[in-house]
Image (cartoon, rainbow, N blue to C red; front, side, top):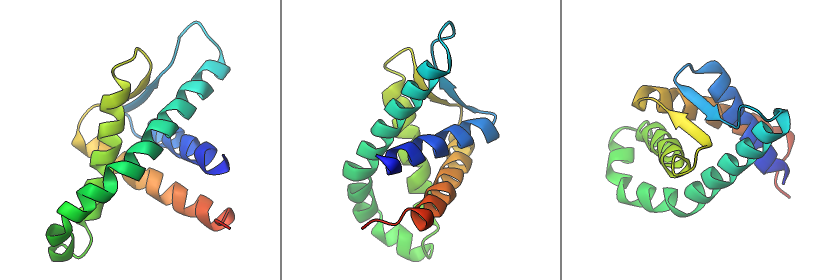
Length: 123
């Protein structure tokens, strides 16, 4: 549960720092509604990373090797973009305008999740 909250925090930071990433929540509701939307987006992001990302990494292994791992940044951006695409089915969720915004957001989310992983290691 703490990892999910950390992922939601990382997505919130990415939306705060990158102009073309937005978390859409009900406008007439308070902060609680935005937190619920962020947690829902974090759940979708976690599911995408658990099921889709390993397949994409396996299929793109030659590119990852040739680029010395830099293609993993592109994969992370695509997973974030896929999360935004899935949540666009609702009126609320994550909106990303362009690949470069997704790439920058993925870098921010990766760094924040890495820092949270150091503070809260898996036991």
